Image (tube, rainbow, N blue to C red; front, side, top):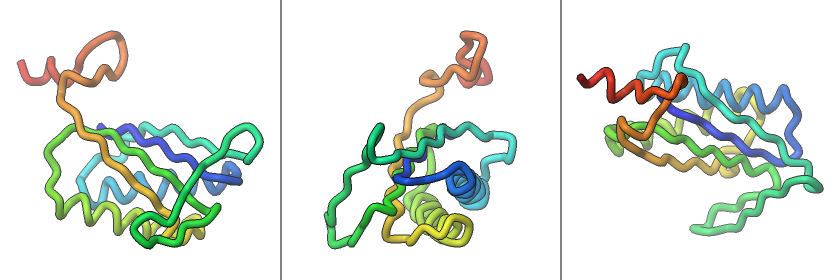
Length: 130
C-alpha cells in the first residue's frame, strides 16, 4: 500500500493526472501493487502560493520542470526493484506528461506494518498478521 505525493511547478490538472498515472503504473509493473491500491496526493505549485526549489546536486541539470515524487511504502523491496521503479517512473512521466527524466526526483520512505491505518481507526496490516 504505497502513499504517493507528487508536487510539480506550473502544473495543471491534466498533467498532474498524467504524472499520477505514470507513478501508479510503474508501481504496479515493478513492485506488483494491485490497480485498486491507489492513494495519491497531487499538488501543483504556481510560484506565488507555493514554490519548489532545486539545484544541480550530483550533476543533474534540473529546471523549473522539476517533479518531486515521495512514496511511502512498507519495507521489503530489493534495490533492483527500486532502481526499476525509478527508471519506469521516468519513462512513463516523459511519455504521459512530457516531463524530462532529469526533472524526476523520486524518494522512497519505508516503514513497518504497524505504521498504517487505512481507515476506521484500525491497523489493518497488524490485524492481517494475527
